[in-house]
Amino acid sequence: MLTHLSQLVTDVDGAWAAAIGGLDGLLVEGHTATTADLNLLVAEHAGLLRTASAAYSQTLNGGQTRELYLRGERLSVYLHPINADFFLLLALDGRSNLGQARLYGRDTARKLEGFL
Image (cartoon, rainbow, N blue to C red; front, top):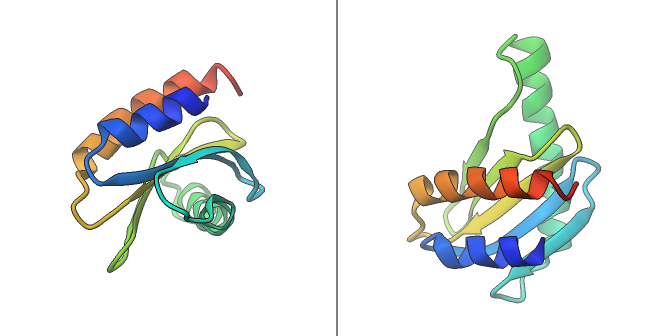
């Protein structure tokens, strides 16, 4: 799994971390090119993904959440569910390429599904 995560960071312009997180907020595996706390990133974003998923599927009748992208001033995160219990997190900087993040993230999530 670590090989897929490190390759994802290499392939996506502006990516600096990739992780597999559980919707329970626990880090399963991760790779970062910085000293960032992946446990914290996964824990915070698991809650956001759970809330967005509940809103879309239950309140808005929009179906299952397929992806979630959050952008701040210095940090962007792309989230892609792998299965019902796990998600892929890709952390990006200001020069990131969202198209690459979506394309390579989706492909990586499919590959990781076989491990989980």
